[in-house]
Length: 191
Image (tube, rainbow, N blue to C red; front, side, top):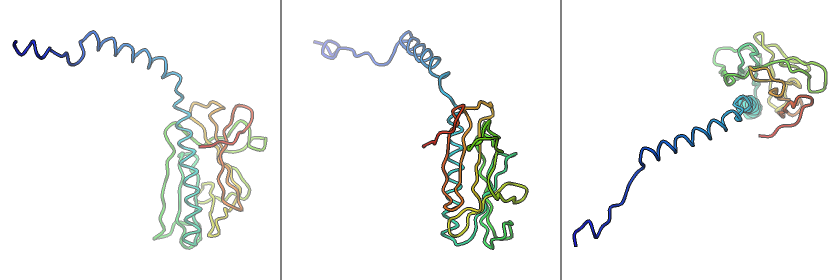
């Protein structure tokens, strides 16, 4: 008996027709599934997390470091400015750290079709909203309180009403909640 009879030949790999069929099946499944994926929703949810995390971190740092942190909303630039305000004067002085957080591409601050409590709001709205360097701003104090009740509205650049999200900041506690607009009402969101 020779070696070929003892050890039968085992086929390894795929033939070209098998690979072609596999690629065709994957292409058909992807063609069906991809139009159903809403990438705008993922970008908006990511922006919600960025804003919420930034606000919560500013509040924590204000309590931890016992001085103000100023979060400004650059509506035109779709970004946040965080000032570590060592002397509590709301200006970026020498030695004070300033950080910018930019929202994802395709996400912007915008005025919603209807505000949270009814009526039409602005992209950034609230009672006693401060203006720092020409931007609406929220100041977190060393006790964790915010300078204002504030509502921040974001949406995608495609301008679909159901893409609107609201981040609501409570003045007394600095708590940040977010809501999703379903076309007629605001519903509390969860991440």
